[in-house]
Image 1 (tube, rainbow, N blue to C red):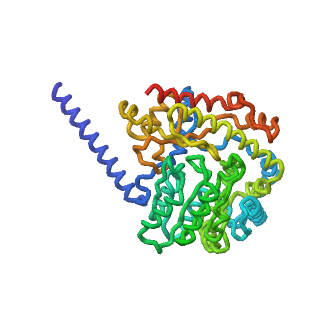
Image 2 (cartoon, rainbow, N blue to C red):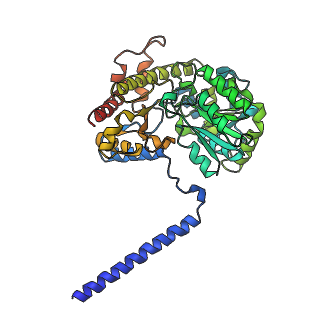
Length: 456
């Protein structure tokens, strides 16, 4: 009997080894057949944390969903009505986009940003993310990003095998590119004659801050002098909390591409419509991107493009919508920042969008005492113990051991909050109790963060 058991165990062991070898061999084959540029890349962290939050909620746990940056507000009703009206539109549209929409977008930027945009320089795509990818694909040159940066800029560049230069900002720099940082980078740049594309994003994701006019002028001057093109990702531009967003395209018109879309300021992320606006000097880039688009996605959904016309045309209703949205985001964003600052967490007051970039470095010693050494470990522990889901700083190209994280203050009923804000004159601030009444979960989640660091 003893020998039978020994033989059985040996057979089981050999069978297990055979299975493991086969799995390893299959993995090796799969890796061999996969583009090596994809090695090390996983699902976007923003999407991953959203799925994990949903899973925890499905398990009956209370989760403060501060991970995914999605507008909580409804799409403006007139834009929704336009979509209903044009639902029967079924034809393929021109690759670059519906002509009347392209003209409307150009007019939008002429009016809002003071640039001489023309319809011929507008490209409509299935979300600005896809357009950023296509631009990096057709542009033959280096990519320059500023850390912290949006999660997809660098993975896209890696997929395409681009050389990536990272300018590292810090809390002291407001997490943004400063003229001094840019000047220092340019002086140290080895291949100064090689074409390069600088990607700027402001109001920033993940930081919620922006530039002063003087800073934009200096950065524009340096870029022009060094023949560096700029992709100005202004997807949050209309969510500047004071409504005074400035585009760097105004100061460097011949070398700046402006990115916008419906996902943030219009609350229509799932509609997947993004826009790129090129100066005449860069129409050749627009044309090359259109060629690639014609061989990949063909064109953006027809009903969505027709509906987008009403969004970019603006008008009194859209402006009222935007002012109320800005008031709400400014109110809850600033109150959250003040609470975090009072607890010793370093964070800048938000200027636009709906993000705060938190710096827990004041608690480094306490975190080390409980074996937390990376921002990912910090966020995992925080979620497990408090239900607060924030996104670790390393997702935004920060050092793994830097205790930073992004908080998206969007976990509230935007439809209800917007309806309440509309009852208050635009010229008046929101009442003191507004956040507690309509954004209570945000305040509760922030309190959980402050209590957690206090108890470290």
